[in-house]
Length: 419
Image 1 (cartoon, one colour):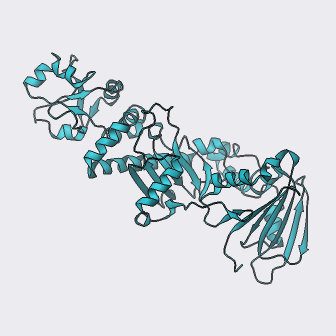
Image 2 (cartoon, one colour; image 1 turned 60 degrees about the horizontal axis):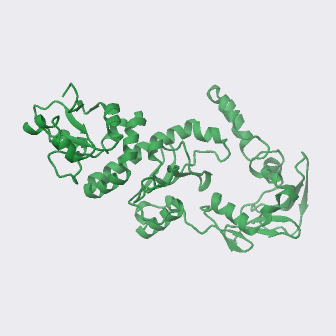
Image 3 (cartoon, one colour; image 1 turned 30 degrees about the horizontal axis):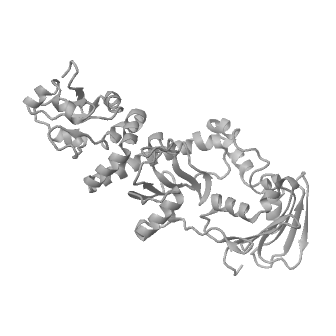
């Protein structure tokens, strides 16, 4: 077709039909039989057959969404009849009409005056009339297909108006675009403190854009934050607020992860616990930790502000994420006795400043700095000019216990027998 690619959706409430018209490559008779002649030929059956050829994945194959109701044939969940007009873009192709009530049979005949592309008309059931509402249909498209790379319109009005920034190169995205996209994806009105555009082709295909907010909503009295990263495949949403995509402690991160390696029609169980998700989780967690460490090295003062907002999440990570515990520990920041209270230091900085004869890292969990300084437990350390970390958060003592050591140095409380 010489027309630009696009999809136009028309709703006719009077005749109770929804029509999808595209300007794509269309289909010939053989392709119609192959793609629409077998229920759920949309990909799930082929996926199951592929999965069942491997002993490791036979159980996973059984958890896929049922064959009926996937892809094209899911239209029969809302319609009692589907008519398809199509003509292939291949030279000298004829037009065809495919018609079915979804009960196992279909008719296929030649049709005149069919333009290149495909038109699908769904006769909507009485119990699915809600989909004849323009606003309802537009809302669904915005949720699941807002970033598809060609225009989608409903009754002549373009619906998908937001650009998929994660597909662009890092240097081509402006700060204003970052700010607007962050607000769109997070439903927030603050500005992001940090942003990361991460793209990779191996071992998995990944296109992602991630943000660290400026404010912690949990500290502002709101409920526990839900995971803030949406999972896409080829710019189509397959799991909003993906719970298993990142470790729990990274729930404050907002953004999008898109991987072409993810099938569009997998069950929720496989999307949460399947091998691809587990690999994605490992890759993305490591990359986010490195990103935050890079930001800390670049601007320690700004990172200090970040840590005051989100440090509790980092501490959760040390306690919960055993796979990444050592690297997460490098993101921790603490007050120390030989610096002003507002100046935070990392464990690396503490160790680097240790006298040669000092064997351990010393900390003291106290309600506040003054209580620590006035405590008799601190007095001998002050006398010998030994630096002590002052920890004031209720979680800190548990963090030190879980960590136990850092770079070969034991973490010792000044009020313990080992001190």
